[in-house]
Image (cartoon, rainbow over all chains, first blue to last red):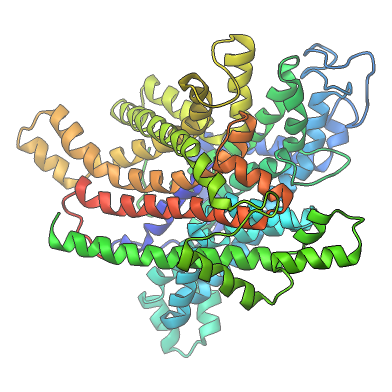
Length: 305
Length: 312
């Protein structure tokens, strides 16, 4: 669940970087150019994610059955050639449920991570650059925030709010934001006194200009890795909220909700509980592999492993 | 313990108390401003207005925020009183204190599992870098670290309780009942720790002091276990510290999945019933525990690596 800690290290490694080491600007073109060298480490996660994206966009083309098609002749039937992943207690095809549930599960994860990236990143960018008391104030506040374990805070908030897509995305996103703030801030602090920033200031660039044109582009690499891994964490959290019954209620259940229903049938239908979780795990593995590959590409120390 | 050590501990403890106080404020404020009226929940939806108003008055939830907050904090500071449960009317700490040991036991076993297996797997993978053992351990760790803990719990129940009938799936009290939930929480963390340990060991192996030790003719085994592992442990222990927070939150789902008593179960039940004093106290106890663990983690650095100086 928590590769975030892992990344926090790679990210917060920024201040210890030797003064002369190059700080890499975020440049998607250069990244793509260097891709072939590390093709294998990108191919597997990219392939998995492409298939999942297909499920999100056009589930009806991928799935063998509709998400709500019930087969009264095949209640809780084991995996077979007609139903690869078996059927549930209402005779719905589990593979089709998973494919149709992808949209909700993945949308929540991606949107929540984007909220965390923008909110957390913006605060980190500004506080890191401004420094002094606003920085100290926010850091104190986040220290308190992070002392309450994430999931507990999310559970408390999600219970009090009406379950809706927006509330779930905002809750997960905002509670995860401080991690993005910390990495962004560390990166900005490492960069803001570099000669090229001083040079920009010397030729009369405004603070806003410096921040958006010079500091921001050079701070994005670790944020990209953190965002990738964040999607995996958010997917797990979203599934967990649905699993304990405070997540989304929708016609087409998401992966966590399917698992929650499976709890009552564990003794009679292993496939019901096994496959929906495999979908979540596959998504998390794919983003973790992608995050690792990106980190290796972007790490200024250029580790080769 | 040296003088600077005591000073460090003191300063850090005061800091931790401040953070704990902030955590109370944060959760209290969040619960206050979010919609949902406990009085209505207790009285039931079709209760007459006067009854609901009376309950509200009795609970004190009709008062302004500052008054409620001051009252709440005052009682904690003066009497160690965290309030009474909205549901049972009993002091919330009674139930929490009674069930806390079950959660501590679970968290402790899960942490030990994670630390032992994670560090072992990471170290074995690192010294066998590039060989099949390394690949096997790495993919296993990735898989374990990527599974949602509640799904892993379901798999464990399916395999060990339903299929093999080796271990009980539910309840607490015996050691056998502790095994599956501890494995469920611990192995997930072990996966992440193993990947971290491997990376850190490989980093340390490239450091100049290792070259010096080799040049001095120290046996490779001694270098690895005495020097490299020790230096590599710092980030690993830090990660373990933050993992404890995740283990603690994991108990919310895992304790109800395995039908165990404990802090997590209290939270998941109280949250559904909008039993605010119970939620506040339970989340607070979990956070205090988490803060304490991280204090210990900070302090362990100087024990692990002598180069680290303690600074408040």
